[in-house]
Length: 430
Image (cartoon, rainbow, N blue to C red; front, top):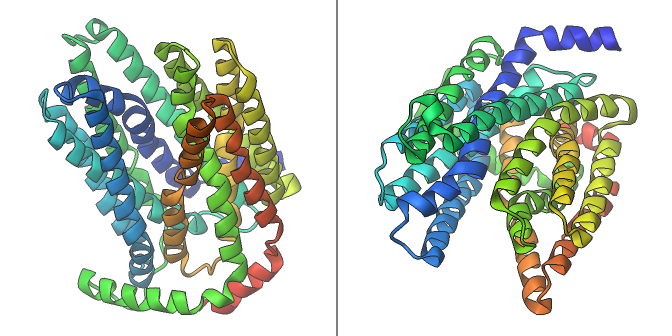
């Protein structure tokens, strides 16, 4: 087994595919999770009230997510019909890269322009992932898909974490880098993310194969054919019962995962923890996530992907119980380690398990639906937390309520028949 894994990671196709996760995770960490929300409030939207800036930022995130929800299934269908996954990956990666780099040019007070560029960058980031995920079937097979999927997430945690660590140091000590102040450091960080993203996108475009299409299509023809294929997909839903059962289970438990990630800082602040300590916790999660994702890929090889997902859900339930009673910052750091242990694992194994349930010649189309549900995630969880917190006046009870999503997702996952799902997928190939 060890020798097989060693050869796998030396495969140029696998490494090139995984490096795209290394590339665009810099946007997820430095921009989305780290610096943009803080800098937006303190620099671009300094003239707005706190409630106004929160509303504007929330609206931009919601609008970007809604766009992806609407176009994701169609994009996948278009790319499959034209065998143009890498071309569309390039289009949307370039969109995200250019918009992120352009944030460097936005002056103080330009909140509307900053939000527009940010929202477009999020659309590029999220849409590009549809085609990146679909290329997983070109660099793996039944025996390697779990480890390859985990390898991609692991590289993402490492790459995104490394650049984020450099960017945090830049913002805390701008003079070390020849920068005049924190604002200049944050803007430089956005530019660095764009360069990083562009540089490490090149390998996937050069070295990851894509099956040749029997027909050469232009963009207009691909769009027309994509609409036709999307209609066919909806007509085949009754034949893909296991895949859709899994997607519903995934939607529930990944909503719990994303809720914990997105609400962790807010929860920590509500308990009175220092914001600098919370940023350190975010870095801890990134670096723990690198080896943990690889470990989960290995565990799936022994136990199966579904058992690995169950293990991650069980750990998340323990995390929720721990968060419910904690009152010290060191406990928040331990919580960050625990989240890092399972965050990449549950994402990687969900992706590789889904690959087994879909037709191998239509991966982008079906990953369009997968990513659409991913964008719907963190909807019910935050709402549930808000309602419980408002009704009880207790943030601790609100975090406890998220356990409902994990339990419901695990119960629905139990009803998925993997062998029946594989048989359904085989019937639809060709």
